[in-house]
Length: 386
Image (cartoon, rainbow, N blue to C red; front, side, top):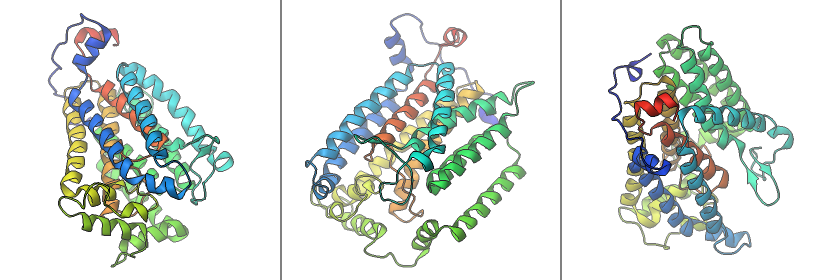
């Protein structure tokens, strides 16, 4: 086990008196909750700018997507607060059940799912709405894998590292079938980070990295969808009538302070302006300084959670918290990096900000579990399993 698991100081004691909510409020990381709330508000502001043009093109009420985003945002915040009240033991149990349900749901997508004309079978359609199970699979898998990895460190424990690797490979393989190479890469990257912290041999990690590179080359060779995105990323010039072209022009036009609220033009031409490329709308209308605020809020969440995890002694809590923190940080980094051509196009939403019911609810669930794992608990509460 690497240094994160040993040598930390104990968390400061907390009183056990008072109501459940009172104890929760004193123990939860209020800075992280504030940053999450700020990002949801920013998401609503950007949704007001980015989604009405799409609603108009689809013949829907002008603020159709805004009201839906607000609805799912409230549900996500409610799920976050509810799960943040749970104990690590309850989080583990919830994640075990959730992982089993959504792994099965992802496996059945080729038979029962739909692609909505986008070329990737990622959703279940229910007429009144749709569900993307891969969004929910990620946080539940991370916590379940953390439990396996932590169990393997105990005398006589199961081969958790091997089991978690097989499950990570299975989950990534099911995502590749859709195809969704971005989410598959994210799942493997977060698992690899957790395994590294859990004490994986460096030679083994190098071998796994080599295998991932070989799999990427095979995907490039045999998948036209994957090859197109890589070729577009590596091209010297950005094609002006592509999503990357529109996003690049919007970011350049925004400058330091933006062109003004409601004055941006990219939302009228970019199909995914309200989801995958929402940061381009932010850059064009509000400028670089506003984008740096968004980056700073994500940085605050990551740093605060890592800081609180350093005070933990329980291996499961450390690994699960690290994985959930990395999930939020990596997904935000990839989404914003795609817009500035730091990464190939991935089809990945910006947590807390992009439109999408499945994405919002899954992020709320993941953040609720992370807040639960990073709560300060007294020795008496730990002993009682609270």
